[in-house]
Structure formats: structure tokens, C-alpha cells
Amino acid sequence: MTTPEGSARVLPQVAPGRDTFDALVIRTDFGDDESWQAVLGELRLPWGPDGEFPARVCVVDEPAWSGAAADEVLAAVDDDDYLSVVFLADRHTTESPVRALLALSTIWEDESGLDPVYYQELLDAPEPREFRTVPGQVHAVQVNVTLGTMGFGEFAAAASTEPDQVLRPF
Image (cartoon, rainbow, N blue to C red; front, side, top):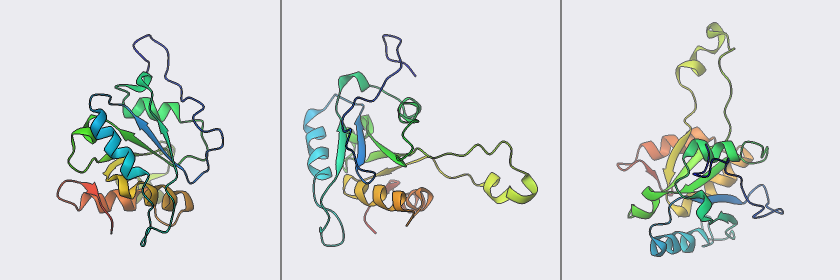
């Protein structure tokens, strides 16, 4: 969970005024600027059933994050109590025809102390930690998971029904 220089990656103060509903997107692949610009363009489009909501996104676009793994990103955002989901623009994103970002749940629970008699269902089927989503769904995921309208697992389940395992608009 460190950079090649040996120090842990730290999120910059990209948005001290970042709202709870702003999606946080971290770029971890710097091999295709044209694809990245297309991702940014899609992330900045209004969203909602009729495009009535403005896009709210905070982007970390710093080469220091090049090659960062999911666990590394989750460790860096661990102290943000208001962040439920973080999105990665990784190599898969830039190579995917639909520019599928990796959505990562920042919420996890230590299930090691749960009594299996009462929590067997939870222990048998833990919440998924990640799924892929098209850029146009980032805001819907961010807002709904933050509000608790839908759970991260519900979005992951919807993505899993797609042939390429990528969440698209319902």
C-alpha cells in the first residue's frame, strides 16, 4: 500500500468543500489521455431520468496514483466517514469500450465476532466490495448509496446480470 518511493499514498486536498453527494473518482491509469478525457466528459454530464441533476464529481488526477490498487485506495479514504463509495478510473476503464469505472464500497463490517447462529445469512453472503459501472451511473450510485435508498449490493447485483458485468441505467 505504498508508492514506489515507499510512502503511503495520501489523497490531496482536492475538495475541502466536497459535499457528501459528490462522487470521488481517482485516476490510476495514465496510459490513454484521450480515453480519460472521454470519461471526464461523461462524468460531467447532467444525470437523472431527464438529466435534471447537475454532475457533482471530485477528481483526483495525479500521477502519484498511477497503478494504485483497490486496497491502497480504500486505505487512503478510510478516514473519510462520509464517503460510501469511491470510483477508480483504472486500465480497464481506459481500455473498455463503455469506459467502465470500478466502484468500491468503503463500508465494511468486521464479521469475525458475529454469532453464526443468528447471522448465518450475513456470513454466507457478505456484501460485495466492488463492481463496474458506466460513467453515466456514477452519480446515481453515489447519491443512492449515500442516502440509503439503495445498497451497494443492489447495484453490484444489477451489474452482475449484465453480460459484461457492467452497471448500466435501469
